[in-house]
Length: 109
Ligand SMILES: Cc1cc2nc3c(=O)[nH]c(=O)nc-3n(C[C@H](O)[C@H](O)[C@H](O)COP(=O)(O)O)c2cc1C
View 1 (cartoon, protein in one colour):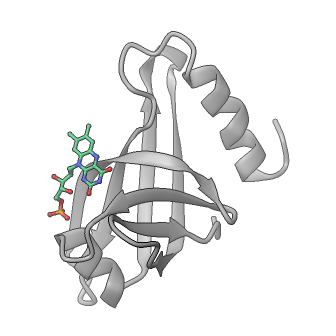
View 2 (cartoon, protein in one colour):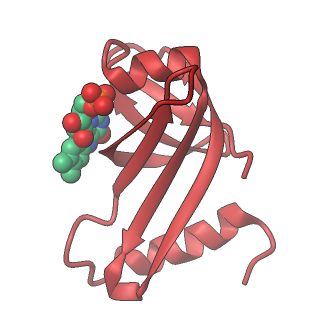
């Protein structure tokens, strides 16, 4: 098992893309209000950028508004055909890259 969590992720991810019955890029993304009220939804993983997990969304969505006020988030991939999941908790950086918006975990695991 690689020492770096991102290397572990990449090894699993490459494997997950082979023979997955569903899109392996679908992840659960949890965010929370500043008071700690959680919410979770599915989003599409759009690759690793600057050492973090990226996805696209709208700043005015609930997740966008929550991340603007509370940057702590968590994601979970579930790759049933590999019998496993990969989870990451990160402080997100919200980066404006035009529309749609891009929210990036900064890789603190
Ligand atoms: C398979 C799947 C993939 C999705 N991917 C995204 C995505 O990449 N970005 C996004 O903003 N919403 C995506 N959605 C919709 C979200 O799950 C969610 O319904 C929507 O973004 C509103 O969430 P919010 O109100 O909690 O912010 C996806 C939904 C499904 C079922």
